[in-house]
Image 1 (tube, rainbow, N blue to C red):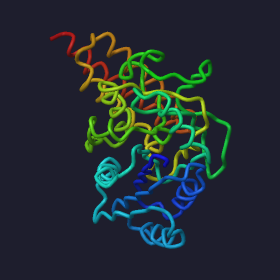
Image 2 (image 1 turned 120 degrees about the vertical axis):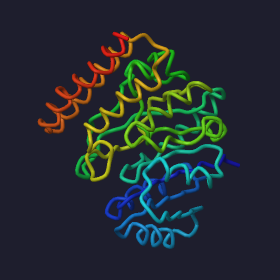
Image 3 (image 1 turned 180 degrees about the vertical axis):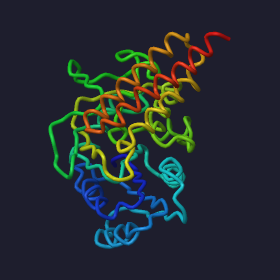
Amino acid sequence: MSSLVTVIIPAFNRSNLIIDTLDSVRIQTYDSLEIIVVDDGSTDTTNLVVTNWFSVHPYLKSLLITLEHNYGKSYAVNKGMDKMRGDYVMVLDSDDVLFPQAIADEVEFLQRYQTTGAVFGNAYELRDSVKTKIRHGVQFIHFNEFPNLNEIYGDLLLNGNAIIASTVLMRTTEVRRVGYFSVTQRYVHDWDYWIRMTRYSSIGYVNKDIVYYRINSIGSSSANIFGSFLESIDLICATGKQYSIYDRLKAALWQMKYHAWLAYHNRKFMEMLKIFLIGLLIISKIFFGNHEQ
């Protein structure tokens, strides 16, 4: 009997997109699945759309959790984790679309690498519902797979988030050890989670196509590049105290460069300028101020 995989889909006002996400789970070649949708206080018809979709596909193991208020993605994911029954778990954004073989490929990887706690793969840009060949995340083009990201990539905090969250499949046993996602972070909660997970076990990579990652949809983290930048700096400051000030400064400057590039790529030129100007001010105040103490 195949191991059960739980797919948690946190959703807020996704009535126009979530069907594509649900259908991509339904057509997976791996069929031992349960779907948990957590409606995070949507004010549109997301709840009704999901309810109707579940009724059309009654053969699927499915659960809809409805929250009265919008608490944020991390809170919604944590509620889904309370109900998950699978041996493996994936947190899939409600505007992303899986490749049909995605879960089968990642389950096979984790079954071969028994000491690896999670695995991620390749993500491609989904822009205005157009599936593109543009890759997102760090590209490990010289590797077919590896069981330990840190050995290849280095420190996740200092080098930045190498992982697109919707590509990750985790062992439930490891998720229980790491605990819940941080509810105080809106944009870097996944990066923080991978850093915490590597304290307990390794994260592997498989060179397989896993997800189409939708960018710039309303409410998505990619839509607020400046907010993501600020949280990135805060994460480096809050969790990187064991590193030298120069290592943290280098990491913060890299985040500024990266987010400025994202803003430029998305033609958000004023946001790019704000990242440079305010970013330099914040970094100088935090790091050089600490250095003088």
